[in-house]
Amino acid sequence: MRIGWIGFHREGVPALRALLERGTRVEGVLTLRPELARKKSGAADYSALCQEFGIPIYEIANINDEESIELLARLSLDIAFVIGWTQIVRKEALNHVRIGMIGAHASLLPRHRGRAPINWALIKGAPHTGNTLIWLAEEVDAGAIIDQTGIAISPYDDCASLYEKVAQANRDMILAVVPRLLDGERPGRPQPKVDEPNLPARRPEDGLIDWSRDAREVYNFVRALTRPYPGAFGWLDGSRWTIWECALLPGHATTAGTAPGQVLGPVYSPQPNACGQLIACGKGAIIALEIEDAAGDVVRGPALSEKDWTGRIWRNA
Image (cartoon, one colour):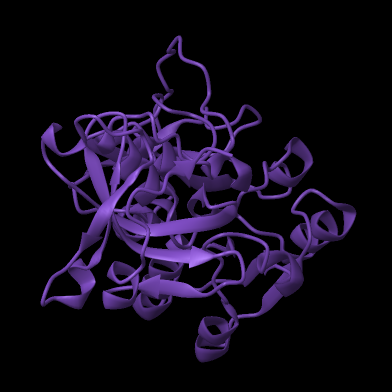
């Protein structure tokens, strides 16, 4: 069986490495050209892994363009794993893989089809999510389900740690299905229908913090958009700052009589990572632990707690 791999995101690396270490033959890896990958959050360089195992690597711009279609035709694949790939694979590309393409979507399908399911799960404060291995079809995220893995979301998770859990689920499900594929099976069950809109895409400008929200919502928003994504941001004294990390305070008493976004004062600790600035929200407060100015200078720890910002107000614009 001729197996190929299509991906550029770090969530696919553990699965591909595990396949290669097991001795599975992979005919080639299709990945994004470096100048395009650099513009994508969470991009990984597959070249070292391919070199380690002697796998041909092909840098492409679009899986659906003429160049890529010709490449798929030359590779003559039976199966292609499409893991960590943001472009929708159109019918012509799908038809150039004999048995089919297998992808993964970071939710328990058919729930939460669409864009950025990991980010949305954190933003909404979901206690759990999942990962689904599917046969790719013309309709997005609607192909037959091969396997599913539930994933718990702890209060300490952020988008990076949650993607690590997704990557592990990719690895385990793919390792489980490959022997079945090699034995001639084509496992899969149709997805049940749900009356639910697809999740919308997220853009960097969607990271503006609404300080009138409950502190837990602000905390969830920040951890959903932190690295490798562009980050949640606000405005202080006319300057834009990205908040990369924050902590959530319990209760609402600390913000009585204060405006949303008002800096209540510095937070000191013998532990440098616990130092920061206390900021009021619509209800409750968060501690900003790591921030970055528009010039790219990062401030955290004692350097952040020493800022004279008490009484100043973070704005939404």
